[in-house]
Length: 318
Image (cartoon, rainbow, N blue to C red; front, side):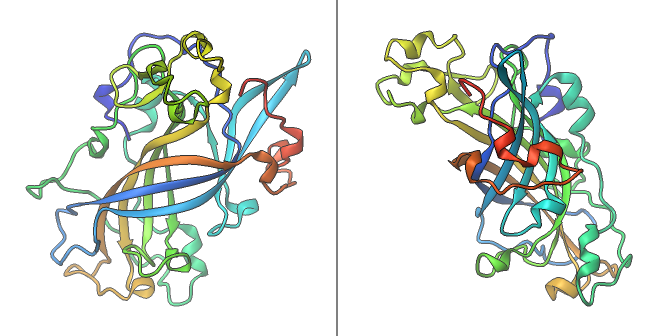
């Protein structure tokens, strides 16, 4: 989701360990409409008013490991919108990593989706296999954008140390049933294809010394993303505070095509006999509401120990 030409740099590492984000989160996605696709001959089906905000409660399980008497965080997480998904069956298996140039180049170009999310087969009236559409967004002059990753060109991650920790360009599809949780949202009944990036940082405003310690904040190099200074805690120590007393937050971007099949949205097909399509871009912000002790326990062979919060203690200083 970040501009490929705006990423990377020389090899290096942040001096911060993999952040621990296990717990119950509130993630808010603020959507803005894009134009497209180029071949669309009908009114854009994305209706506003824009910007439009979706807010989800999200469960995040995170694995930790213990060796030589020390507990450390791994990047393995499971992510589930608990009120819309069967978490045991459908939680996403993502990994928190540092956003190196190689990682971004491999993962971030948008992967076109020509069919539907598999779970649509469960819905009465859906014409399985009935639609194939080239999902290509356009610019303001109705010209196709290539590569599609340019849609997210304004969201940068660092090109130098400290590199950002996060989840980069996870691409997934889902069936939007958001009317279950809010009235008449603009994408209800659509097939959604999202290309999502999270960056995890410590937020200075959550530190107990704030606002006195505001100067202990820095921007990640080359970005607009702010975080508590990565100086080994020296600045905060002047206020009697350690970095671990400041909360992690999630910032990022998501978005992609939304397809509107008539069976689930009531919208007519376009002039080419295909479902209408629009494209959207969202910025996202996440705050943790509760710790991992509030997560349900999920025991299965596919999950292993990651689904058992009691077996993944919070590492010291996390």
